Image (cartoon, rainbow, N blue to C red):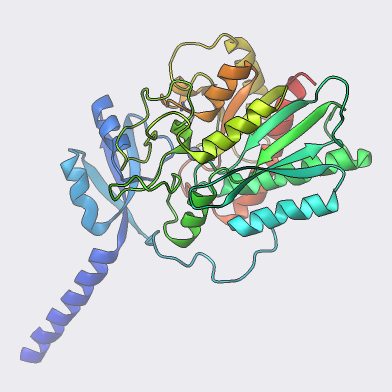
Length: 399
Ligand code: 0X9
Ligand code: ZN
């Protein structure tokens, strides 16, 4: 009898430890705007990219359920998940196939360096900044050899991985880099109308510190790794741009996933991309790749007011939406603030603001089943559809 009790106690203790350490996916009710804002202002790991009124999923340690109570949010547990803070997504085995595996920071840069070696006439790179942890931020130019006279080329700008955990964004910009280099280098396989006066600028990893952290410390990390000085880390780079900075859908709370930073362009990463853009005489269009939700979004994001070129942005966006939808996934499209939610200080709003050309956020796969942790089998079709969506934009912009 005694022994049996002891055994039960030990089992309970063990189970207790396991339970306390385990992580949950919970479905939170978000009935009102204030509730939504409390959620967006919190440091909870939002499972969804795009919470709106209704229900949204959150990943949290079993023991952190009290945080939801403290925020006055009702929820139910929908499942157990692996602890995303556990290291070990891949143990020292180098990835080889960018169509089937996620690449680390070094592997992504290695991939682009491979393109530079293979296509020396068409691919070059420029260091555009240094992160807070001292890492170079690179931009790759893909086009014809630089000309020194005539009308300056009209550039398309592509941003990858502003948000650390949105790994498929990196897979997509690698594919765009490779396919674009092939287009420029080999006229015989050319499938899109690349005109002589065009170049594509790709920033493969806009947020290197955050991206590395998502591989080593927390798979669901979103922001950069600024030390906010109060025990919290990170600025949401996609709330740090100057257009609409500080407005709705951004937070002044350093703990928040949408912390906007102390001032517009306070972060070296947004400064780097801004400086690159300012150095380009002409920009034809821009895409900022995120995940997930399968959406094509245009300005404004910071206000529900219609932008001056609303009809053009919607028309090009519709072309992109239908191109993206040809590979087994259905994309939707709309003005960011109304189709998704208000967010202030986002990159495409700034590019649109300063250049008045078509700029887009593309939210890649999926619609929430796997979310940020999209299974590697879906990398290839996501890359294919993104290439189609990119070409739809290229075809509609001024050469
Ligand atoms: O919130 C964001 O920065 C983007 N979604 S994500 O889940 N990838 O973080 C969406 C930005 C789109 N712009 C607006 N909704 N204004
Ligand atoms: Zn994002």
